[in-house]
Length: 314
Image (cartoon, rainbow, N blue to C red; front, top):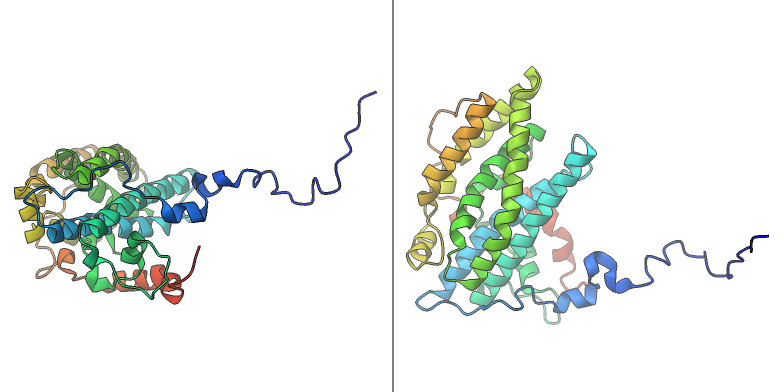
């Protein structure tokens, strides 16, 4: 006769007991108190290269970090709303990839120029990268405006991801040779991620373009809505120019031919005509802190809890 197992009185009192048996593995392997003390740049040489202005380096890292942070938030808005579960998971994972890039770049910015970090009430446990993410106003963000527009439908989101990842992948491939060890390390990891992002977006762009009449209509409408912001990605800010000359950053204007060639291949395969060349939004750009109202609204939602509880521990 088989032995009957008699559970101990408290054995099944908490169905989560097994999950919490080793809580050092909870939340991606790190407990909240450990996460606060973790240095994301541990093991990487954070010395500012000779001849490089730390203030300019910090500004450049904010530019690239803000690009990733803002688009990450936009993509996270698709969580539980994508057309099916597989795409829901894919978009969320891409958002997490970009969030990881943003964290490293914001930490680098804070290390290069601590004056960039917002000052909070004494005793606040908020780390530097979170201060930069949650306690700057919209005019202090340096992202390109392509990433801040509301999502639109799935076709528009795919189009934006294709445009952005094609451009950023080319940029990161050149950053691999950066004289700044942190930027080179971020690029080495980011190239692998962005290659997947571009492939995912390119496959969906082709599918939607050659799918139904409605999917193609939506794709073309999304492309038309986003195209005015495309030229801004190749406009060179003085910070980008100076760091490119110092062998640390990348002049975005130098990427235009390469990126346009890749995009042209996708357009040809999809049977989509490249939109007519037209001027972008004239005047100051996102790199200068000039943004659309959409960013203000997004930040109000993204930052509200942190600003309400600057001494909070999460």
